[in-house]
Length: 213
Length: 84
Image 1: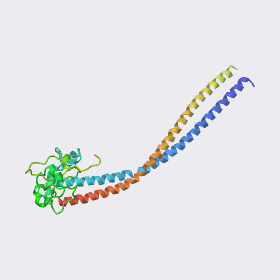
Image 2 (image 1 turned 180 degrees about the vertical axis):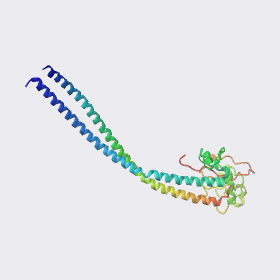
Image 3 (image 1 turned 45 degrees about the horizontal axis):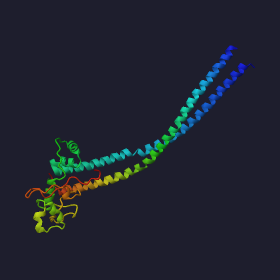
């Protein structure tokens, strides 16, 4: 046999061997990839299974919360009337306008602020507390014990829900304002109005203690 | 005879080209494997993280109770306070 033919046969054999080796290695890698993709598929299927009920649950939660919001907004609208949007705006800045849109009204929303004198007046009237000018700050802080009913004329009209518990029997409770936010008058309440001011007594705060702020 | 030697040269070139190409294919296949394994690990971890999703049902119950309490409170306020 001639040398060239031997070389050709050798080269053909080498080519076949090379093809076999590389293709077998590639097949092995593809098998590994296939196994890995099988694991991925299992994980994704688990994720899909576990997240399947999320939409329904979240929709239900959202529906419940919307119902609660509508309830409270309806109550605010019924009880506060034209002040409702301002109350909502004061509690949740930016929500007043959307509140108006939800109830089908339009206009400018003016925040009520932290105190709502009209609400305080209503509560005072319900509790039988006559609105009266608030005592000076020093006197308020010094008045630790509840004043006697005879002295109600100078300290009535303010009901504290935070230090002395709920009022009972309509007895006037001197001292703190009607605030749902824990604070002291000396720190952040404005100075008491002059004597004879119509709503100097009761104050209601529309800003509660909100931990997310 | 010359044709045979030309054939030898062609076969050598073919062998070299084949080695280069198959090496590229094998390298690409080997580079996919760790990526797939990493995705597998992430999918498993994500699936495990989603075990807490079941707590949403409890949250839903709590929210329903809170809103129910809110409704009762609102009803009391509706009775207690005068309308605007």
